[in-house]
Image 1 (cartoon, rainbow, N blue to C red):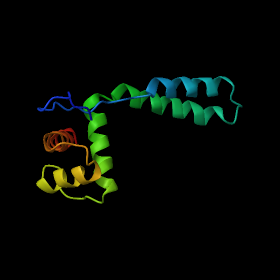
Image 2 (cartoon, helix red, strand yellow; image 1 turned 90 degrees about the vertical axis):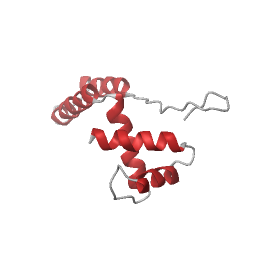
Image 3 (cartoon, rainbow, N blue to C red; image 1 turned 45 degrees about the horizontal axis):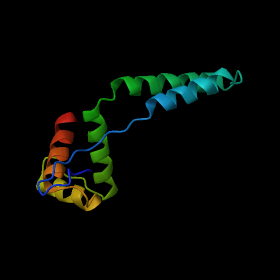
Length: 110
């Protein structure tokens, strides 16, 4: 989370993806793979390519939000005050506005 340094903060979740590096590593591994390892690596590469193609920023943020809520044991509805509270407990640096936006976005995405 990053603010703009002013009194009124503008915060955003920055999505970082390393899918390009993962795909490249799998392709390198496949190049030198033994015949018995090839089927598993080919399957892993297909899976990784599919995940990379369908991962937009909204879904990545939604999965991150769900992961943080699961980490603190939250199991209720995502569009609730309790979800916002649990997310802020999991990530104390989140502002109230950001936590509300993330839980709403996760609810809508899933």
